[in-house]
Structure formats: structure tokens, C-alpha cells
Amino acid sequence: MNKPTVRNIELRDYEVLNTWWEGNGYQMPNLEDLPEEGLGGLVIETDKPVAAGFIYLTNSNKGYVDFVISNPKYKGKDRYELILKLIEHCLDYALDLGCRSVWAMTRSNGIIKRCKELGYSVTTKDYSIVASYKI
Image (tube, one colour):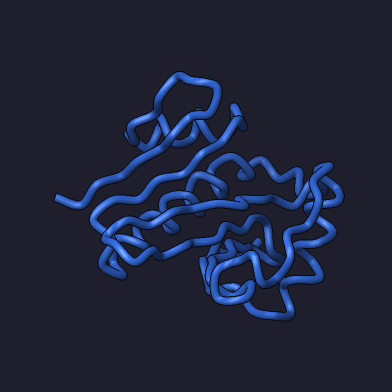
């Protein structure tokens, strides 16, 4: 197995991501609803793509991460760590682009657990808001 890498999403990834959304029981978002018409995100891969997330930049110093999705057929023992690495890269990337804080909303217990492991602030309401701040 190759060392995991994180790269920008490319248009060719969209077909694969669609199968992930369907395989996870979600409806695929339209390209125009995704940042940079579907290209504003990151993919983590080993030999093949494993997970992806999208980074929205706002007209303020806040960023937003959404549509984190993983390959439902990938069962590698490193799955948990790879998704953790992707989340961390998405947040770091937004901070590197000038955001002073980054947030996300989710009901996914897996995402919430990973974000808590990374030390991000997580609320306990119906939707959890995950935030990371640049000091």
C-alpha cells in the first residue's frame, strides 16, 4: 500500500464521489452547490481515493467544511486514521488560505468523534458545530 496523500479534488473525481454518496445513502450535491463548482476540496488516497471533503470560503475570515464523504467499500484498517487526516487537512488548508476560524455542522457520530480527537470544539446540540481557530 502506498503512503497516504492529500490532494485537491479534480473534476474526474466527481464520478467516483457520486458512487460514494449513493453507497452511503446520500443524494449527491449538484456541482454548482459545491465550492468552486466541485473543485474546492481535498481527497485523501492511498492506492485509490478513500475520502473527500469540501472547503467553503466566505466573505469573512471564516471557513466552512462540508460534504465529507468516504468510500463505503474501503475497509482498510487505516480507514479511521485516513478520515481523521483528511478532516485535519481540510481545516488546516482553510486556515492557510486566511480563515481565522473554520466550522462544520454534522450529525455523524464518526465525524464528531474524530473532531473531538483532534481537539476541536464540539457542541452537544442536535447538530454539532465543530470549530478550529487560528491564534
